[in-house]
Length: 105
Image (cartoon, rainbow, N blue to C red; front, side, top):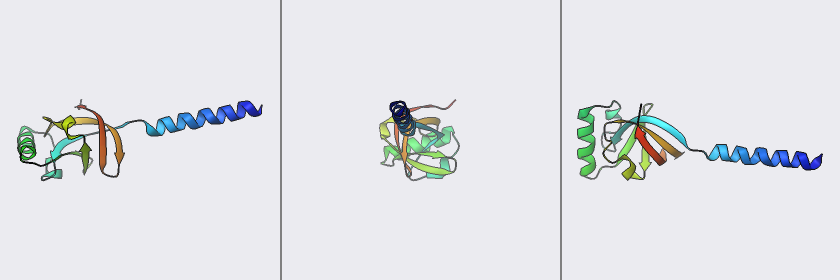
């Protein structure tokens, strides 16, 4: 009986750790560090502004629920400035380490 109890607790701990480490996802608009929340709505005008600023050295950010998040690696957002996206990955503070970026549906 004790072996079964120990095995059950072990399985529950492993499953809990796996769920905690799983990727999360956020939906928002790709902006850049200079404009930040200004581009909270996707548009052609926002796309032009964001891509132009990034070409001059700004960094991409994700604007979601009224907040701006730093995203790395930056190349996952290349060409998506001013567009609605779904970013999957892990967050620490305001930094998202993206495992995938795709157009939002």
